[in-house]
Image (tube, rainbow, N blue to C red; front, side, top):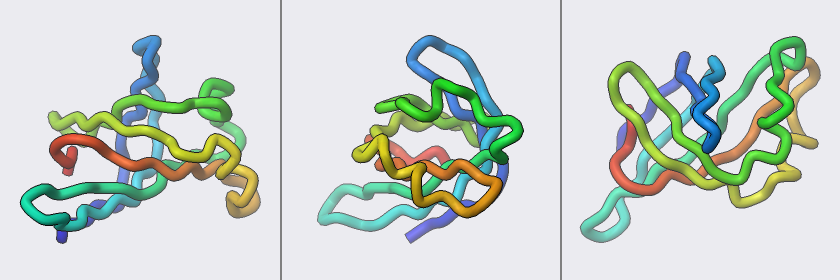
Length: 95
């Protein structure tokens, strides 16, 4: 199991890029490894696209990973002053 907590770049399907804070972890699952976690931004810098985002990519350094967002209403439980979404990765982990 690997984990990462720190700066990342959210890349939307439209190709727009936004700085985020990522908290991610990978989990062995048979012969494959899955990864998941959260992306967060302060409300003051929240991109409107993030509210209804269903899928995208995340870049950490030179590595990218595709993800889906199983529940687009998950941001409602975010801590005060922050927007946080939950993601599930597919393919190789970007960290």
